[in-house]
View 1 (cartoon, rainbow, N blue to C red):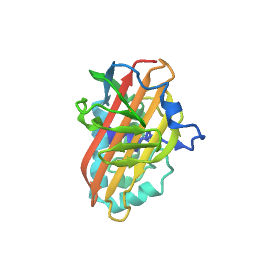
View 2 (tube, helix red, strand yellow; view 1 turned 60 degrees about the horizontal axis):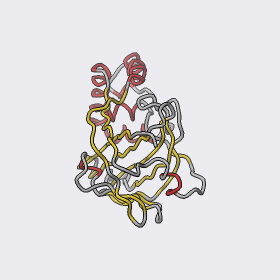
View 3 (spheres, helix red, strand yellow; view 1 turned 90 degrees about the horizontal axis):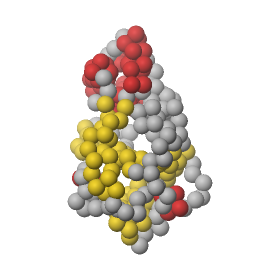
View 4 (cartoon, rainbow, N blue to C red; view 1 turned 45 degrees about the vertical axis):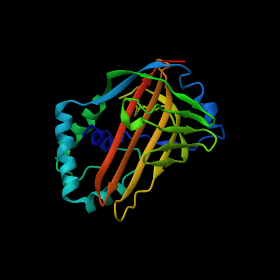
Length: 230
């Protein structure tokens, strides 16, 4: 539900072309060289925001074809324009957009993290919590991220922006995989990013993946980890 809130409010990560700096050079100052205590962050939204987002989500499910066209006609990175078919009034939609600024990430759990060095980069431990990151490989030679959802091969840069209210401003490289067929709504959309928080210098690791089959999400994962500054 909170993910829908963040997406509707235009808070999804936007990537920009990245200069020809190697992924290894970008990641080396960000990733820990020893075992560290990683904070697993959990999204939080006030009940009223979740209520409005739920009504919008139900409206989208009731008419998925219209909602798809509405999304395609919108400006990437901007809040979805209002339409009466969103299931809320114009005033409620303005309230929804205002409340979206109250989204935040709060530490839910602290877990030890030891990234294993490999000949081509790094690998997440096979017993790591949360399970969705287990075995994930950062291949700096091929410049890809290998996950259970597929290989993320399109690299770009997340720039620090005002849209990062929930986490605080940060920037760093991200990799994407997008195989979602707009006609059948079947495929995978996945993002992996590592960046530095401006306020604290700490590292933020983000992983978001969804697999859909004919419009239905069959599996998904979203993880935000906050690591000590290097």
